[in-house]
Length: 236
Image (cartoon, helix red, strand yellow):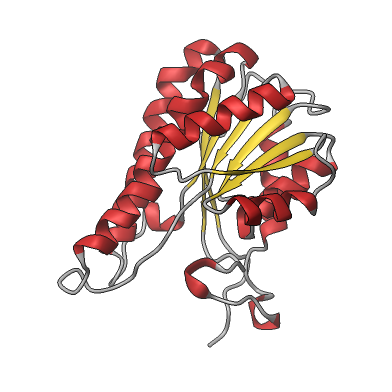
């Protein structure tokens, strides 16, 4: 796909991987809409990408379909089309399964799993028109389980399965669907503050370059599930 002036929507786009991907897409000539739960935070993040003809920030809670529908309506009104979607918004609550609260469980299910469904439902008709690309941000936790990760594993295993089935459903419309499954990434996820100690990790801009590479792949070829991990793990 030619990327110049194409339009992308990125959920959870105010920082970390989402913002890293947004920067990469703007750098190759695309226009982007990023969303987060707080409108002011989303607008400030979008302003770092360019003026309102290049990037806009929107408030949307992906756990609510109505929010995603409103966001997409605003994107179409502003840019007239939608070509690429990155369902990136996610949360992580890590605790032994017997100590995990119902609230923590449902927060992850509603954001990580219901969210990718809501984002797809809200964007699928514009993507049918553009023969676009729908990408989910899963995790290696979607194939590798670990202690204290029952809730997070459940959602990310679900995201991987959802995305692969959606790929089979939507390719009849010439919509490409992929899931990206990163390992350790240097972001603020789970209240982590990135520092020089995170230099060994995948960087947000690396995921951004990966998304650009996916978009530039020949239309006949679809990398539907991509595992990505640090080349050399940290020595502890």
